[in-house]
Length: 74
Image (cartoon, rainbow, N blue to C red; front, top):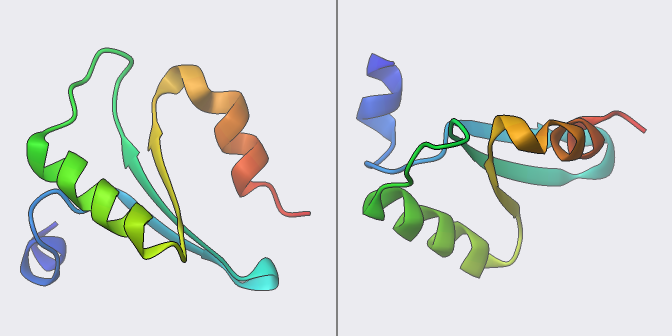
């Protein structure tokens, strides 16, 4: 956690994943089903999405089927 605080600004997503085999870059913020997204998190997710080169998600436990499909090795 200390490493993350030094390198990344407030609101940076919980997961950064690079699927090497199909060159997909994925950012995901993880929340409980009732967890609130902070303004800093909303801003960072919007900025990453605006880059147009990555997939950006807000994932909650209720999204587990979608999460599995996205992260599944095909």
